[in-house]
Length: 240
Image 1: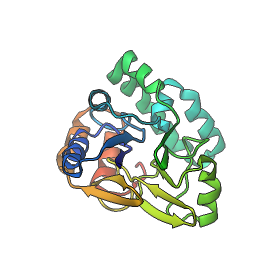
Image 2 (image 1 turned 60 degrees about the vertical axis):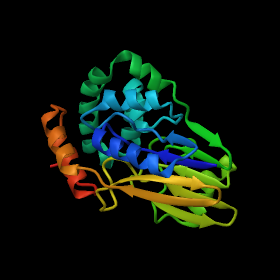
Image 3 (image 1 turned 90 degrees about the vertical axis):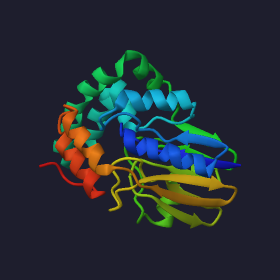
Image 4 (image 1 turned 30 degrees about the vertical axis):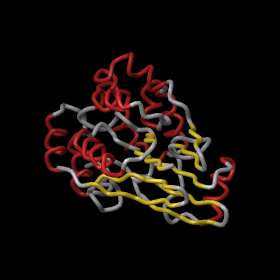
């Protein structure tokens, strides 16, 4: 069974449409999403509608959850004071995102589970018990094992960090999908993951990043200039 996992779309319609077109060539038996669908892009409602129309199962991400449970952002901010200014910026973008998606879409996001278990794999957004923290690509084998062993799956997949990688451990493969939008690894292309039996592979898909950044700047979203710089750089850029 061939499974594609698409995560961290962040309201980016052009990147999403490019991935959907690429999926037609890959022809997976199942497509899943890894959360963070709406927040941080010019088209939050449209992405939710398209994912629902395609019937993709998936899991909730941290920026999904904070839309209906803003206390989750506040709790994370309380434990990571050095990120306070960044999280304050994120907080400012929540009201316009909520206004854009409306109550019914919000309730659908709220219904997403925290974990999806399939044939030979498990999917979470970040960690099994935490939507806000996840191992980085340079994490030790022991950190990966201790973080994901409770899932008891031969292949564990997560998103959240916007940096794709695949790590083979004894008895377990841990893989990150990368992100459809706002890549942090220096590559502006969209990223997603394909599992085909024991094979696990990252796919990168080109899209019109410049046009998406320009549309983001016209969207009226607070701090859109910051998000546009991340899109164009393909890596994290601190707010100015």
